[in-house]
Amino acid sequence: MKSVLILRHAKSDWNNPSLSDFDRPLNKRGLNDAPHMGWILDKFQTMPDLIISSPSMRTKKTVELAALDRGYKGEILWVDALYGGSFYDIMTALHSIPESITRPMIVGHNPGVEETVSLLLSPQEQSPTTHERVRVPTAGLVYLDAHIDTWRDLKPGTCVLRWFLIPKIVKAMIK
Image (cartoon, rainbow, N blue to C red; front, side):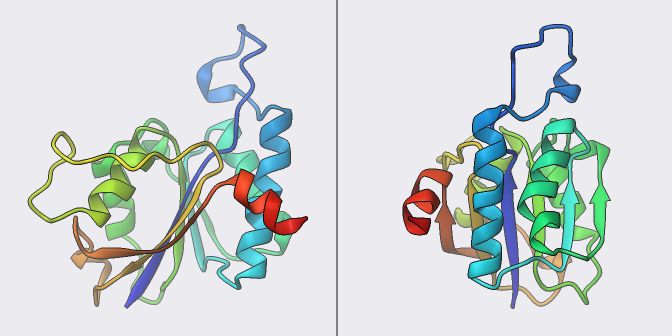
């Protein structure tokens, strides 16, 4: 069995209209929320053994605050296709993971993050256009157990939810 962590980037800042979408930084709430999700990775001893992330400014900062600042020392793959990536782009990244990796973390954007979580938890006959969507807010962190032997076997319906946390709940846990 393998596991997959899926983290949506923390809340971004829209205050500078001259910045491209790709270059938007995190806002104050995002800068506060991302470290809380790192606290969960550390506290639950679920630090990934590989991070695959969109290379946008807000995902890079989310990775820094949630993983690097918590001691993550593993490899980070910055995958251009994950910026605005769909379920298929995320699955392509997951299918390419070496078999020695047992718990990767995807850091990305909506709607791809929600499509991926929803489909991995849905019956196999579902498609990206006909499934029920799981809502993943900014900095939402999903932990899935994948009942597969190889990453190539990962497909809709092969996962079960271990846990799903959002910053608001994590902040209450920390207090």
